[in-house]
Image 1 (cartoon, rainbow, N blue to C red):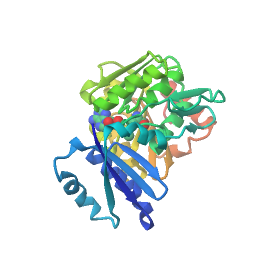
Image 2 (spheres, rainbow, N blue to C red):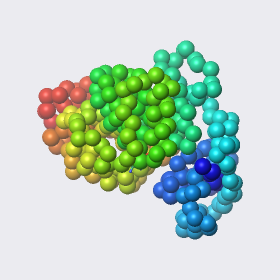
Image 3 (cartoon, helix red, strand yellow):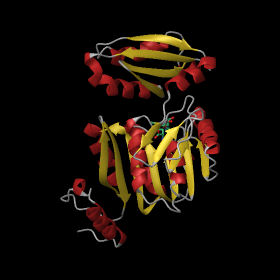
Length: 310
Ligand SMILES: C[S@@+](CC[C@H](N)C(=O)[O-])C[C@H]1O[C@@H](n2cnc3c(N)ncnc32)[C@H](O)[C@@H]1O
């Protein structure tokens, strides 16, 4: 498979970068790479018929003041292309994500080996980093986890390393499905069930924890299904959207199905938010943003356990 590589050079327009990346992701671009003065975006050339790509890009690029250059990357060069750009990344002092061709670093408790090829999820994107940071704080021991929009399965692999009993990793992109299987094998993990599909592929069972780093519209569309398969008291983590206006939209959609906002992390303009499913309405007067200290969190967990809500 050959790819288009779009090279964006930004100067004064740096602040528009995330908006352009989000718009490109909506068109099907699924791999992005930061450069010193902008970013590159990749998509299989088969996605567009002749001339269709410029037509698809025109409406939103007209709103911005910068242009782009298009290169054609044959599949044979793809691995070299990302290998030269992929550097190991860390989340806190416990987790390091590296590729097969990097040396291991025993200083880290968990090393995740990722061979991303064309799948999203090397850990470098803010949404992935924040989802990993949430997971590091969660208690996953013996839990069942659904990783929706799994990409490389980076979150599923971290969940397995943190003690989850069984992880179902679903992605509607066949390339991600293959990547999920390959990366689980590279990390010697045998309790990740990889599935290629969308919300109809979510098994009819109850999960303790759900992870969904996709985008606002897909999350809203799939919300009811998530609520159906999330256990009472279960945790659900969402990312792939912005603080404003997306977070409020996600909060109110989730609340329709008794999944209540607890807290969120923010990097650049991206957000990763934690919700809990409960039959009890949380008092909207209570500002859950201040549930950041261990004590407050412990109080909240106690109240959740005993279903007492203010
Ligand atoms: C932002 S990436 C997240 C990848 C990885 N979970 C991470 O955190 O880095 C979103 C993923 O969702 C997948 N996706 C998009 N729409 C989907 C849908 N309707 N059902 C399942 N997966 C979907 C994409 O193929 C992509 O791999």
